[in-house]
Image (cartoon, rainbow over all chains, first blue to last red; front, side, top):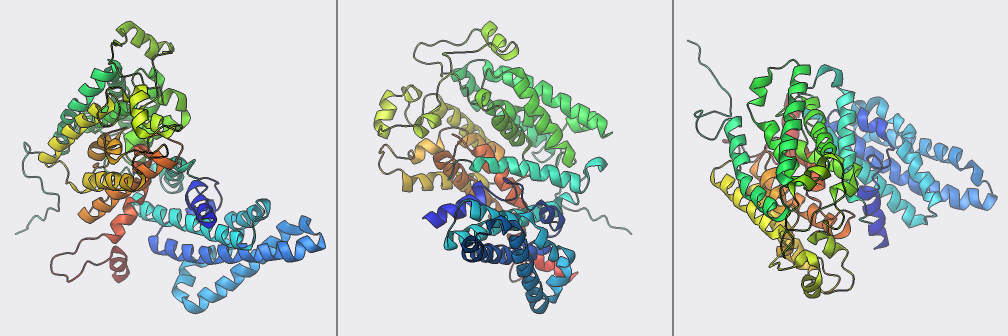
Length: 190
Length: 354
């Protein structure tokens, strides 16, 4: 039940993209095509869950015993970069097509603030091992959900008769804003 | 010899219900029973709302069309702005200050519709965008519903109504909790006791004073639209079925923690207005029949979840926006089987082929 509440909270109520506004760069950058968005979602889910677990382990088993918690931000970035590198090699071997499609956005998962955000929030909320894993996974599912839905919508926006000042990223931002409004409806569920 | 190959939809004749303007006129007509019920129970406020909304919506529509250098009269003639105005006016509480309607109209017409390229391109239902913006920005004004005019309590005099709308006079003692509020903040009463004691349920048969009749009004209007084949049954049936089946599991015979009976959920708040007038919008809903069934059912489920466990007493607007957001994705996976193919082909695969 506790895990269910964490999942519900991260996927809907405190959605990382639409409520906490983390991870907006891939959200705007990779949402032009549904297929790419699905690939990016899978990669981000992989990285987020793994990075959340690894950074928990680093924090709980290395930094805290040594009294080095002030190094947590920099060590989390290091952990995330390593996990992303691992995911990159994994995708390059298993799906060269996806690897080429994702292009620069794959290494850019390193700088996805949602990944670092999850790791830092785990320590702030004093999550244990399993809670950290579920929190990271839930954040990734929430990110994937809105990214995939948004990309399906953006394919439609691409052919809409949008006034020229609002074409492209501008109308994407406005749409994201309206979606954030809709997600306010989930407030209070948890 | 060159053959013309017009693509669907094929217009049969100007007089039948097929052109945008005649569909919109039928929708306007079908809102009448609900509007009459609203006016009967809450006084002239709904009609004043309506007049204000029509003025502001048509005004913003004209302005937006002028800015976009489109023919104004041609686009005003499709009555879509009028329908948006009516839906927004019906959703906003009567006797709301005028600037509430003005702000809502701006977001509905300019942001939700014209920034996306006008009618046919808007991914979100314009009236619901306007409503949600207002509900989040001005929660106090947007939840002040007047006590239904029964039990000897007369209507608000016209002068007082105008005062409330234009001069911001407070209507203290004239507002009360809606039935959905009452059941949400129910403290320790069984449903039966709540119905017996709370003012929102005085002389109510199913779902709260006045509100059940408002919903019946919209149900009648909706059935008329269905009869006129303005929309298919899939989305409304999906939504109402979900909103009927889910409360069955959580009704628990009417204890103090009960979520309300299935009929309560069907006939309170904006259920019927949403089911027949808002989620049936052909632009913002899913396209195929299966898609519409899924779309409607998901809206019904979201409405129930937010009503029972969320912060907001009613959730039709939020549920509609959330599913508007998901509609293009639903379309991707509910592509109908085309004639000559064994199975439906997913839209994703088609894209790969060329």
